[in-house]
Length: 243
Image (tube, rainbow, N blue to C red; front, side):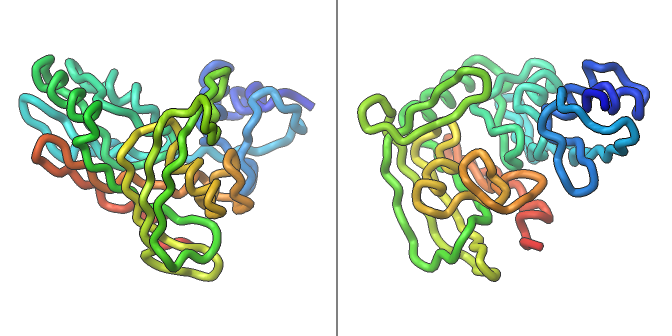
């Protein structure tokens, strides 16, 4: 028996640090099981499979803004580092795909951040959720986030900040539903927590109660409208059609 990251490093001919990073990013599998703990003890003959993230694609860019179609399993900050002189205007969870916006200059960044602060930004998502959802719903519940190690959010009417999520059903497939989502606020894990609280956790979101195994929570940031312009990222295959 040996630690997972050490076995992976030996198998792939990479450093222990790189092996840990791949596991932490959720890219390493044994069969169809994701390796979640880098220090987990595994048999010496374990064979790993590494999932490769999709390529980063620029949707639009000019002297003020860069709109990127962020693949799942890539940090928002990695994209900021990769685009010289760009500043993140918001962020997406590592496993969430879709539209990510970055500013090219200070003046535009200031105006954009103010628009986010005043909730003048329209954010549209699409997701697959557990259960059959046939009626629109609105979830207006405050969220409190605890940031000790891995961030986790909770509904908390005393300490939470206001959060509003609107959901519309789009398609039902077996006991899963595809939904469209708009949020007026941008709290950490807002969509994931609100949908879980409503009894419809996002498929693959084990942290918030999904019983379904998937490569990632099936959530995609489809469109953002900011300062009169809209930027849209096409749905990836795992969102376009479930199974």
